[in-house]
Amino acid sequence: MPIGSLIGGLLIDSVGGTATLAILGFGVCAVALVFSQVPSLKAASLDPASSAT
Amino acid sequence: MKAPADRPSSRIVDDIREGVVYVVRHPVLRTVILLFATSSAVLIPVAAAMTFRIVRDLGQSPAAFGLTLTGLGVGTLVGALFASRLSHTTNVARVLVVAVFLMGAALIGSAAIPSLPVIILLTAVSGAGESALVVVYISVRAANSPDALLGASPAPRGSLRWA
Image (cartoon, chains in turn orange, cyan):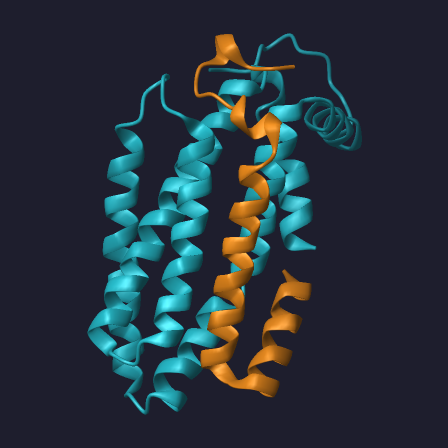
C-alpha cells in the first residue's frame, strides 16, 4: 500500500489526476489480460471437491 | 465452523508460515491471491486520482466527488448481489478476469469522458466489479483452504497488498 500510494502520488504530481486514472485503468486491464492466460486460474472453483492441490 | 477446543497451542509465526507454505504450494490459491493482491495494489491511488480528476481537472465541486462515491456504493451493492447468485458451477476464472477488466475499463472511461453523470455511472460499474471480485476471491479462498488454515491463508495476500 505505501508503494502504491507513493507511485500514485508521484503520478498525480507529474501528469495530473486524469492521466493517472487512465494509467491505472490500463494497468488494471493489463493485470486482467495477463492473468487470463494463467492455466492454474482456469482450475479455480467455488466447489471444494474440485480444488487443485 | 469452529476451531477444536483441544487444538495444541502454537506460535503465531508458525501459523503464518504454515499458511504461506500452503498457499505457495497450492496453484489455484497462489494465482487467485496474486491476482487479487496485484489488482488491489494498482487500484490503491484511484480515490486520490479521481479527486483530482473531478475537482481540479473538470472544475467540479467537492460534492460531485461525493456523488461518484455514491455511485461506487450503489455499484458495490449490485456487484455483491450478482456475486451472491453464483453457484459451484460458475466459471470462476472468467468472473475474476472480467471483474478486474471491468474496473480497468471503467477507469479508462472515467479519464476519457468529461461528463459527471458518465463518470458516476462508470464508477458504479467499477464498484460492481470490485465487489464481485472480493466476494468471489473470498469464496475461492474459503473453498480451497482447510478449516484450520482459513485464518492463515489470507496472510500472503495481506502482506503483498500492504507492502
